Image (cartoon, rainbow, N blue to C red; front, side, top):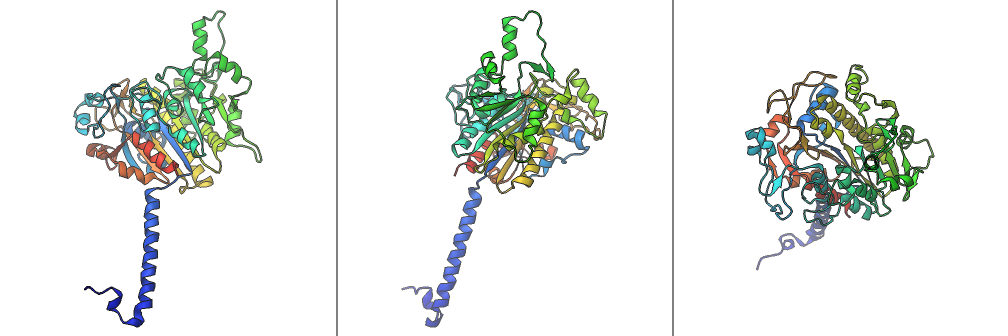
Length: 486
């Protein structure tokens, strides 16, 4: 018969042995608790920043313009630097198999056509499909908002956050009911149903407490809209499209709707971003920028290089820049309204990086990107001054790449022209591509992305100087849900 552990020692040593074993057991329990905590981190706040249409090269081009060298954006130093796949489901009746990958590095780098390759299950995605995937973890077909390929509503991170007692909000530089903010908070079988989507976002049952973006029916680029003597019914409907229709606007123009306070002046946005001491902020806010389509990126100007203002004025001739809030102001205002003891989730979109790249307008693209990156800076400063990296998870990414942006020549590097100068580039497309997009993360749960790696694109890693590892956009939802749910 084998002797017990204690029987190997003299009788007088037994109490000491018991104490040692007790200490060891206690230490092991602490270690196990720490490991469990690391595996299941929780965040009070989650902030997701999406540069719409921002691929790796678009991010690099904007960084060259703003800083004159690569790797200088605040988020480039985040501990998690990965890539993300963005493909959509091809057909409603052909679900993507669990082990199927809609991005193949060999196909992508084979030729320019590789960026547009579809498969039997996947296609290049639009913003509706990608926003739905990011915010629900479910792949869907293009054009659908907050529903799966079979048109069934899916649960969104904004809805999950509200169920846990947090508040939720979204901010964008393009119309508030556009695809990316819509996919954060609404459900529709068509992204084109802008009025239905907007009305969902400001409904009493909406998960949102903050909605900010363009779409104002009475202004464009800061200038008051002047009606022609005769306006057709069709033109009139277009004016109100995206703000819930004329009936919704009639309610909103008095300053409130469904418990939301409605604002539209630059001063009102600034009062939320920098509130006076002891000022009570509204519980819920709809902020309509005085623009119909997208707010000009005046924050893209580099203050110490006056020539950069010429880029803005040439891209947005006739705009009244001083009458419009920038993305940073909106982001900080949204945070101030949402911040509470239980926490919040906020989606912030630089929406017109995509529009600029669709138009193959690199001048506007770097301006839009600079405004977006300044908003990221402001979020980071807020975390470090008023929250902490122990309680707030920040994710910076894109919904898809737009324009097949390269340096002069396909698969050639962007050519740096120095700070304040637009880099030398070449566009290969007017549309979206299947290229990898960047993903940066910091805060509780950021390391969870490392457990969801889908593959490695070695060539992409060498080209853009990171590991080459990539996740899928649905993984963003799963990481965020993990840190939100108790």
